[in-house]
Length: 136
Image (cartoon, rainbow, N blue to C red; front, side, top):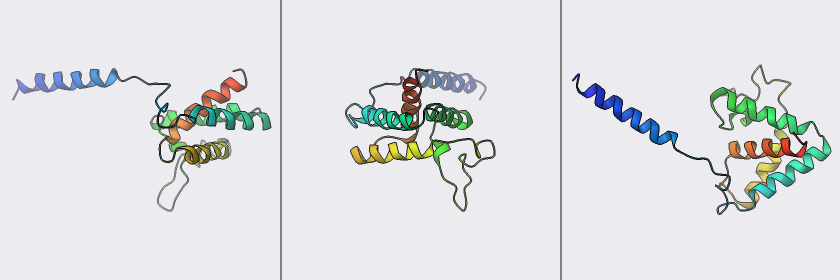
């Protein structure tokens, strides 16, 4: 029994190291949704032209999404009868804004490539573009 503990520990360390080598890719959706970046950029450009502060608001949404349990898009979830989401949590109530911009982008993305791009990825791209559009 005692001799299996080091083997199990070694396996866990090896698996952890393998997972740590995973790489993000800026062209992940290049074939499955080739117009994704243009769709997001155009929608963010329209939103920033209407109200410059929305760039910062989308960045704040992204921060609060990633802060709780990782960047999973959970800040975008609406409450249900059995679920209270982050969107209306006390720290975000009356301060988190820009949800309608993300909803618009998601609608546009779904029209171009249905059930392909995650809400978390849309929020990340929108935050990136929002910062760039206000020269941040």
